[in-house]
Amino acid sequence: MKTVLVIEDDKFSQKFIAKALASNYDITLAGNGTDGLQAFLDARPDIILLDVEMPGLNGYEVCDRIRQDDPHHTVPIVFLSGRSSVRERMLGYEAGGDDYMVKPFEQDELLAKLSVLLKHQSNRQKLEVRADEAEQTALVAMAGNAELGAVLSFAERSFSVRAMTELAEEFFRVTRRLGLNCSLYINTAYRESFFSARGEVAPLEEQLMRLLKPQGRIVDFGARTQINYEKIALLIKNMPLDDMEKYGRYKDLFPFMLESAEAKVTNMEAEEAMFRQTKNILGLYSDIEKSMTELAHNLEQHTLDGQQILIALREELDARIPTLGLDDDQESYFIKRIDDAVEQAVNAGDSRGDVKTTADNVLTSLRRLINHQKQIIDTLILGRSRETTEPSPQAPPTSEPNDELDGGGMDIELF
Image 1 (tube, rainbow, N blue to C red):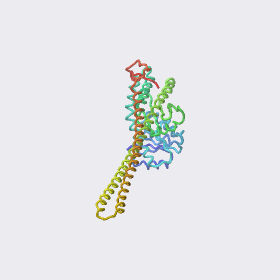
Image 2 (image 1 turned 135 degrees about the vertical axis):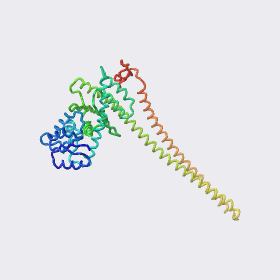
Image 3 (image 1 turned 90 degrees about the vertical axis):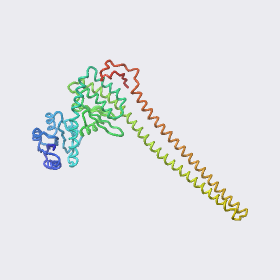
Image 4 (image 1 turned 90 degrees about the horizontal axis):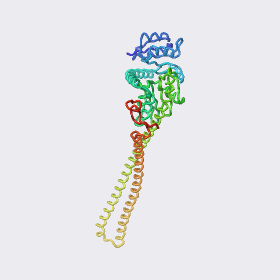
């Protein structure tokens, strides 16, 4: 079983948590911050539930000391508090917390939180090794103007991406080479997505990125900086505070990258809207065409039925009139009856023709609309293809064709 360390001064909360977790976890209890630190060193738990408001050392101070002993965040920490303000959550995130729960909470909510965090911890540990290896390899390869080369390379490669995940990976290709640990938040009319250069984004981090997005273009807190645009936000979690020159360069470079990414996200959002609209129109066209076809069939059947009635009547009268011994007036009546039936059938056929003409006109208009939508999409895709494949005559060649960060020897045009 996984071990949970509960650092909580309230006895009622201790009992509630212990009872809620007893079936799934081994529980270690501590009634204050000092005892909690010792229990952490002794038990080395898999996850920590940490109350914020405690006498002596508060939860933020305890978390900070735990992170000094555990700088790589190998153990998830969930803050427990009766307060839910943005400031409280930011303090918890700055201290090194992974999630934040507002008391009182339900047993199911607590179990779900722990399950998600333990899964996140497992995935992060696996992916962190590979991310560190890629980062170290990239850092060795960087030299000279590698930062600018990486940004220009991103601008060139971003034209050809087709999905948000590809765009995020292109972004992290740059940030890894700069030795930065980042998360990306993309929010369009159709979906909200979080991406991390190191596995998954923790729930508390998602909350903070949402809350900080409307707070201005650049938001700094500690070694972290979030840069916000309308549809995209970048959280840099290890800004180089000890190198202010590099710190300033990053604040100049990343807005350029984010403007490029913002344009691409807007483009992909428009494409998705176009495809959704075309799909809906195509479905509507199919329904209307089916209805029109059924209507035409019914009209055709009604006309045939009328013709059969007329033929039967004519045959019957032709056979009976000679045997009836009718005078001239009577025979004229029957002849007129036949003529009226013929006229009715002709009128029915004419009405069917008018309806069919109207239906054909509607179907023709719908086909024109569908073809117009398809032409728009084809033009959009063709234009994007040309942007990706046609070199710019104004773009100068790079001087180091073997350096991927400098553009890979390809001509690069800034837009």
